[in-house]
Length: 486
Ligand code: SF4
Image 1 (cartoon, protein in one colour):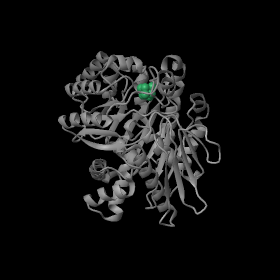
Image 2 (cartoon, rainbow, N blue to C red; image 1 turned 60 degrees about the vertical axis):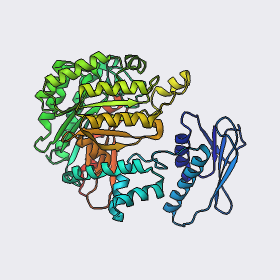
Image 3 (cartoon, rainbow, N blue to C red; image 1 turned 180 degrees about the vertical axis):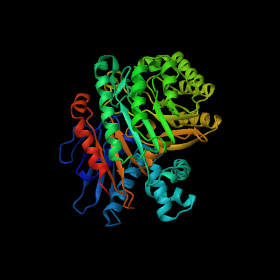
Image 4 (cartoon, rainbow, N blue to C red; image 1 turned 90 degrees about the horizontal axis):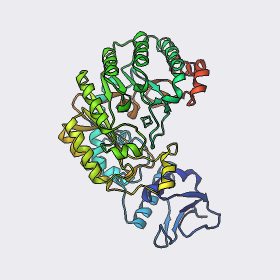
């Protein structure tokens, strides 16, 4: 399918909506003046009178030829942009006979938008839901979900809004690379020789942070990656000692370690984490189907997941999260039902349900090129099975975010039991507090507290060797970001 356009400022929005309505269809962009290369073509054109035309041409994807013409009713650039998005959305909905649960919203933080709207405009719940449909075509169900989560988040975030900070430490090693992974994840077998040097850089970063943050400690600590527990028991101990030695812990409300991969876990590592006061861990199945785990390259079995979960409980962890992915290759609704039945038996304290997102940096793209598109399931039904299971486990939805190219154009939702909400997750999503991020491929974020809503960021090298060799420069970037007064 070819998307032709000459509206460069709206390129991303047009493209994102098109691929949401027609998932799995390879789209190629070209300038409008170019000759048509196939009959599967959507043509977006800015007319001389500044109206916009969309033409659909018959072919394998589009089944008729139609023209839709848009004339803006406003002169305000921001409003025109949204009018245009609504026009694209309505045209594509008419053409495909479908609607999308989140309408024309393409951003990753719908709850931030919903809460902002509710506060700025002083709207009632019904008013917000109506506003989200009128302006963004968000379905009533999703707007209500977003609003419910936004209100809960708002109360949880109150003590952290505009003060304090979160500390993130990235460990870019994993037992193997999953098919869908787009994170920084070096297979530890081949990269073991870099681990001690990496931990030395973490030590340097932590020591510098103490000065840069003037001895103030964080509210939350999150060790992610990668899989931090891909480190050996001794290395994990070294990392946690470094944190204890350098980070003032008096304000820390939550200390999370992504113990994601069951093939990286054993009773000794849980004991080390417990000893160092880690309060929350993630043990991630993604699915309870062995064939799928093998296909997606996770190199662990369902049996290993059960063992890891039991070891964690035996060590006294009472805040265990599980991540699941809906829409993995070869899975159908029966597999989703089975996975959620197993989750119910194990009864974790929180559950994060992802819809599969096909990322450019993952091996999934190549897999699809070789094996064909992943056959779709009824994603809304799958999400309902997950949310019903969460409700049966006394959990409620507490955070939500979206990604590009998500299966079913849905969302990722975190569910948790009362008191087991992942505070760091909400803080990073709603951008109410600064994040000091340490390690390769991480992004620090300074949220200004002067009421301007300004946010500034600095990153570190994604390439491991570059990060190791350029560590002083990485520290300096953070000194510049956090060291100055506002
Ligand atoms: S465990 Fe996570 S970070 Fe590691 S390879 Fe798999 S998806 Fe990537």
